[in-house]
Image 1: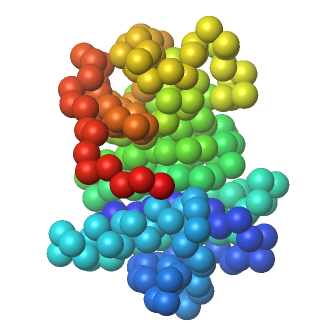
Image 2 (image 1 turned 90 degrees about the vertical axis):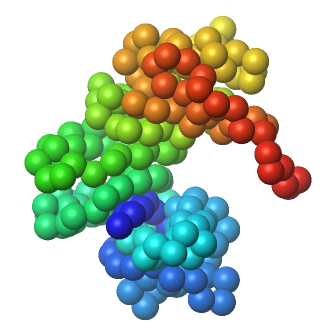
Image 3 (image 1 turned 45 degrees about the vertical axis):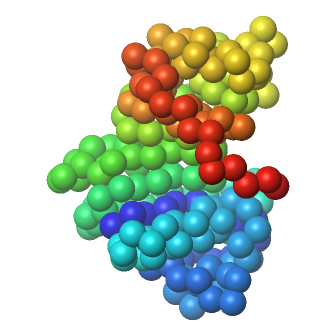
Length: 217
């Protein structure tokens, strides 16, 4: 089963954990609804539809409200540190969470003891904390856009805001940025770089380029 872990931009949204369904244009989890506009709810909605097409069971979601203050993320980290010990997820995707290095290390310690060890995916804020903690190689897949890839490629930047200017975010620099991210051990086993063209890469370079189907925004 796939588990998706993230936040909802609503400080009143409680910590919930359970299978996710779609109802009337919202995701539904443990009787709570969240609008599908952006962020982790949008990711979960896409995961539900993909599961339908592939004939798989619904994804399992861990969600909490957080508008950047970190309180919700801390509560979710605390919950995960206990709950993941009893889980048997095949794949765990970490999405928007406050990048707290200490809590990231605790969650990684729990995951390393899981048998079998799940496939680990990180996007958005969780890529930041994986790099900040020096644990990028513990992950199987990062899914950066070009700006986030430039951050991974900058061995000195502690946050995307501090990515150095010479690491331009131009798409034609993707091969160089990918190589630099692996050189400095700031990339997962695989990278899926999102953009007008998507690049699937590993430490040996770009393995595939996906440029279709294309839906105009």
